[in-house]
Length: 330
Image (cartoon, rainbow, N blue to C red; front, side, top):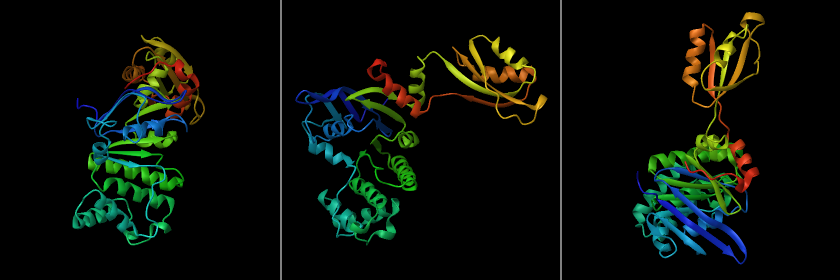
């Protein structure tokens, strides 16, 4: 396994008696999109600032691309692109001019800077507005330009702090899709900080739930969902035509089945053609065995799907439990 490109160990930040970040341990892998999810004031931005060497930790260590961000912040900044929630531009200059200016600050020669800026404007869908003053841009256009701005120096990692704030739903969808496409095409590691559950779930490979300065859970959606159920139970919904209940009886007799809940779905027609949905809870994974049991019983199998908690369920159940939940890393 490749070494982590971002590695935080017991990272802590205190302001007087207030602890903004509390003993944070986190590893982010090369090429993944990691979502740091939590309410406003949870400590997400403070954590990002420590990653960039913009504020010093009270204790603990932060390494980015193998570099100690506290001791060598300039080396980190050369390899990381950072987009805050409201990025600043020269309002009276064009989009192209702003990008070229950033490139020149990063010591990119002018001909290369112009070529790179024009390519990025095309990639983020702003080629048509290359000569337009940024002061006339909408919020969504500014965020797209912000992406181009952080990519101009060809970073290995991009950190996006609440990138979708103030954008309309269609603009959010397009921006998230763009982030994923750029991550995959450029081989970028992306850290995305947000308090919007659905947006994080759309594009992130893994999610960290952050509350009260603590990372209380980290993993992909499936591992977090399993953790909520104690890692011991599996649930599968089975849609089947079962007018006499014999399929339910067959399933109930299977080894590993704990319970069956019947929730009739809309009947296609009364009688023999009615459809029932059974939610089967087991202590072992039975999805394939359930399909085989129904087919061998001679009943029409119309649907079969594992049941997993969505990120909304995970978020609220973890946050309701707070520190009472054991932390999981996936």
